[in-house]
Length: 245
Image 1: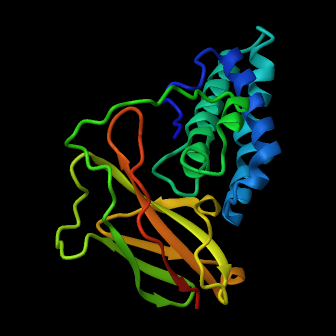
Image 2 (image 1 turned 135 degrees about the horizontal axis):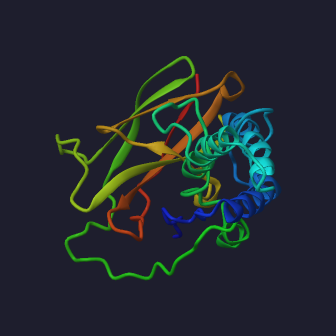
């Protein structure tokens, strides 16, 4: 498994500009193969191709400042534009940025290859590590769609017979992966057909769908993201599924 280090974005503005150009060009070339939801396409447009926003705001302000002939107000705008483009507002689910987009759709997406990450300019460290014996590397979680409503699945993800919904020792998060098939398909897709979809909270995972997905079958499994700088995964859980009504 690979991760993106927290300091993968260069500090100097000129190097940051080179980095973001390389990153966006590579993402544009490959993202159609990543199995992203429709919402990601709209978010990528906001990130990269909306006038006065994110990438376009940054490049307009940097084009002025890099000439070394600029006012204080123009420098302040450049710094604000970079912060908005690089980091955004993590507390606002409607906002986006380079870091937010990579976290949501790239970092733990199994369809994004190491070669693509290298092309994007992301750091791919050596992740060989011997886990401490106290860290749980199996996965005895069981998921079910406990109930559904129109275009929504309410999932429960628990250890059978265990009342506690707390994450186990050594577990950072519980990641949910999803795949879709026609309702008539009753054999689970291969694991490489699943994409990262979100995280379990307090033993629950609510998944909303769009109208185009109605009457399809949604397939799920979870993996434990283990604590530690290497962010190593456990083995996958058993797969569960339900038709989207």
